[in-house]
Amino acid sequence: MSTDRRTVLADAAISVLAEAGMRGLTHRAVDRAADMPPGTTSAYHRTRQALLTALVRRLVALDQAELQGVGTQTPVPENADELVAGITALVEQRLNGDGRRRSLARYACAVESVHHSELREILVPRENAAREAVRSFLTAQGVADVEARTVTLLACVDGLVFDRLVGGGSVSGEEIRGLVAAALR
Image (tube, rainbow, N blue to C red; front, side, top):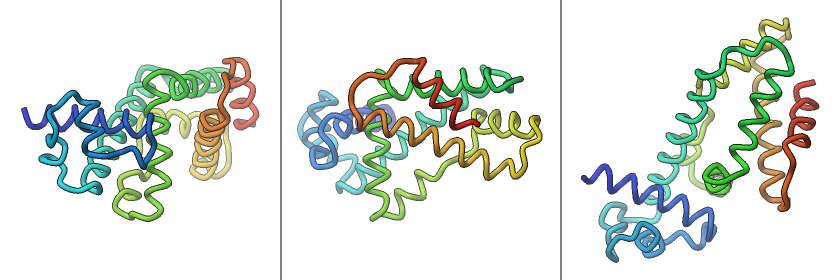
């Protein structure tokens, strides 16, 4: 039960952070969002830093599961159009619904990690099937310095998500596709 409660609290903390920002992330706000009695969050996470660490761990676990799923469900792209389509779908996931909520929380945590090295360690990009698919595609295309190009492409994609989140307004799938294709070139 405590593991399930910890997960519920971490998910609620992600929602609070996405909706209210870093200043709004309090034990009481998480209790309310999780529909738990007052004091529940502080019983599981005594300090704000402990709460933030649990939130980041959950966020990374959710992101890794998503990226692993994307990479294993889709074979290595055979051409640039397939890679662009896959990355575009991922960007759209990150800009809408639950993906948007997690993206907002992720960027808030990334900024916070500048001052908290333990958070930075948790947020470090990890290997997953989606990253491997990009690397394999670039290798098959004969691209020099595949690792650096993979990091560069994924950083561009991450920047695109960030830009669209903070820029407000909607963005069409076609516009995203064009920006991803430009980053790939």
